[in-house]
Length: 338
Ligand code: SF4
Ligand code: MG
Image 1 (spheres, rainbow, N blue to C red):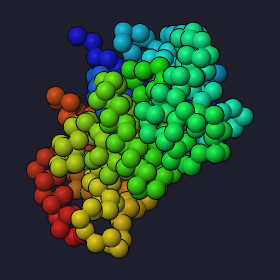
Image 2: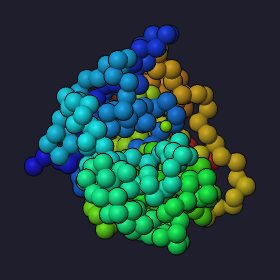
Image 3: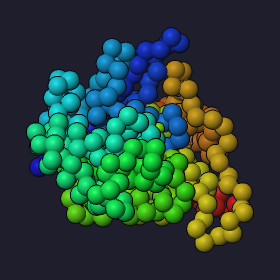
């Protein structure tokens, strides 16, 4: 049986003035309906590019894509712009970090939600307005029958984010891509939005891709996790597998820069030293090697010369030259020194 969404060996390269950026370099994953895949990584890891490519929102002229993206039996990479347009908002939909950028300041919130609905269903204006009110109610906007006529600037940041979610879900999409949708919000609103997404998923069986740089968010919302670094997946598994037993040094580093929920709040975070790799001239071998605390433990300097392959068994795997025994010992020591 075909998975609902299947991405196979995806490569996304685009040309810039400085050369070819290899933003995504051989990424594969599946997603079933009703599941949430968390994609985690720093900026420039390729997580946003992956999802813009799924949505067909990349710049076609400057982008070279290889591999396969199949959504419910439909090959998205060979789909025409018109087909993609039809799928977007209807079958697949997205929410971004910045609701203001997604909502037009010139039209009421209700009109924008309603127009998306009309475009895909051919509903009347009256039906579209009713639907907008219903969606606003569903995402927890108070007095939706009044607020439906407000402009985005009349909404608070949290309400705008809810309105954007309402717009994304107005046609009951089967795939929702959420790219850091709560990053700009305060903790309370953030938690509310996450709960809202979980409820909506329960209700509609939506498949969700949730993109974040924050493993705490992953712990809250994901079923499965894909850790990206330098355009490649370095580790994947269920949330429990990855968070309880990280196998890749990069994941370990991300975890130790995550504030502990029960620990004292003023403990300094320990972000991974160094900066994300250049995707114009990515490091040779393992792309993480210039920042990896364990590269010297692998004999023969292999980390700098040989690409570690991602071997996945039953959805679980990591791409690192360390042996399981080395990893157990080194990771335990690393935790001990913190
Ligand atoms: Fe570190 Fe080497 Fe593993 Fe890469 S392959 S994560 S450099 S130990
Ligand atoms: Mg991003």
